[in-house]
Image (cartoon, rainbow, N blue to C red; front, side, top):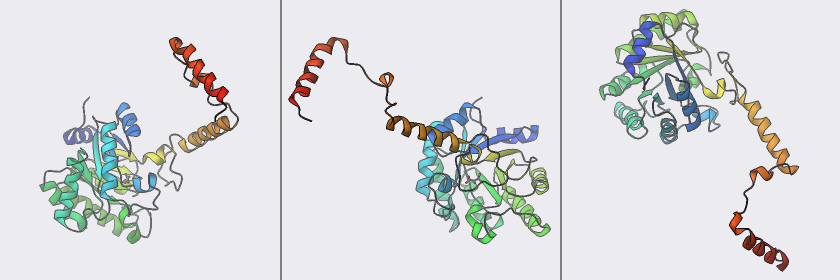
Length: 288
Ligand code: KIV
């Protein structure tokens, strides 16, 4: 199967087939994800925390995002890849939002962009869609506004906030977004939104009823250690695996166990005599 597009994702929703995606920030993970037939990839602005070690996504720039989008595109040339619009790349004005969204397509080969927020960014979503660009909405826990939300906290847990999120979701679909991501909300609310919308609705920490799931690769592969949200399932523990390998390497070098003969190059047979002469001459000269 070739690269999936918007209509394939809609068909999957209609057929009740779950879409699977993760975040990717580099060539190797993108390559492995494509190898296992992942339906989509997101070059999330979570790269700020996972790759750059910031304590949130606010400092992430357009340039950082574009560099990682290009690497992911090279690693997964046949996968639908979404570029995540970083903080202040779309909030300030509609023309700026359109121009920055376009850069993800023109300069990094992305298939779509994602941005955070509901009705308050609806004109930006409309503007980007009008420019012919696929946009995914993202509501619930929106890390770029975690300050306003009081931290990285689950959303939609009260009747009032649930209703606000439903209104946001409907507005995002009406503005022309091709899909919606729900983050850290109760499953019952995610189910209502998924059923109300005709566009695909995906979830991270939003329960099992959405049209598909996304996880942050640093979480599910177990190498991002700063914190692990409740909704994460760790499929492996790369932190442990990597630390163990690095420790063994350090010990091997210090104990003289690495490199061994199997890691060394031999002199060309036909050059052996002349080679030995050179080595002997320099050895006997005593010069270091
Ligand atoms: O930046 C990101 O990784 C995200 C996740 C919530 C999927 O938006």
